[in-house]
Image (tube, rainbow, N blue to C red; front, side, top):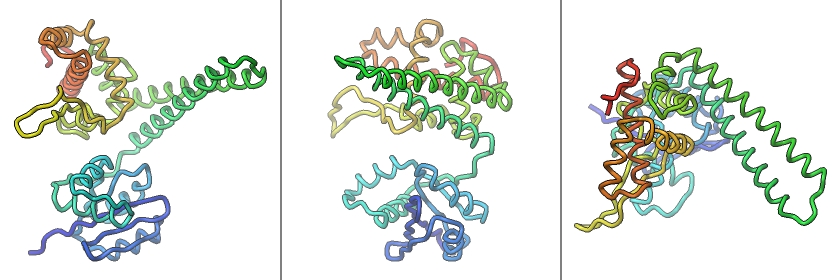
Length: 316
């Protein structure tokens, strides 16, 4: 009986470095010809491990999955943390590929599966919206800086104002497209999520996108960990230093949406309000209370969607 061989990949736009073992490495082009050459070097029972590097990994991961090769895709922040724990200071593509391979050897990794078309579209719209919002913030910053000047060029001011107006229109249209696509495919989930006091339409849509319709994560705890909302304690020996924090390894925009939802839930959602008051009464700092309420909203979201029932005050 042979054991599974874990193969680590560090992928970039043009190429991908492969660590078949500690001593056997190769480089392939990140295109169909390179994919075919790499597949020929693999055994059928190999387990390929790679990082979720932008969108560069998608075509190779999809190709290998279609070839019945087991693929695992790992959060780059997890690999970075693993490398630091192993005191790896040299960063090259070859070293990165071997670190990814080692991680696969040590951890029980879930198999990656290609995303359904609707979620690909939703992710593209969400990414586009995120980019537009970033552009808007940059234009606002430039306008604010311009208005501090003693003399303002009329054309520059007018052009920046027009850019801002155009971006606002495009943002609203992209948000509308997200709503239309989500309502067309997940009307029940959208209704269930917005039945929770504190969760609005934008937050509900992000829940659906990131959880792939509540099929991607096995529990609220796993989703909170993915978002970087899991608390950790700074501890050395028997001493505990500080009140802990969150990892912040996940999606920052969803964290922000949940923070805002937590503020609303503290006044409108009776379960969250009671929970927050109890924590505050025990001397917990406002930030800790807000994070705890955000986690409670995640538990409520999973409860309503997995049970298929609108929000009830009995949900934890």
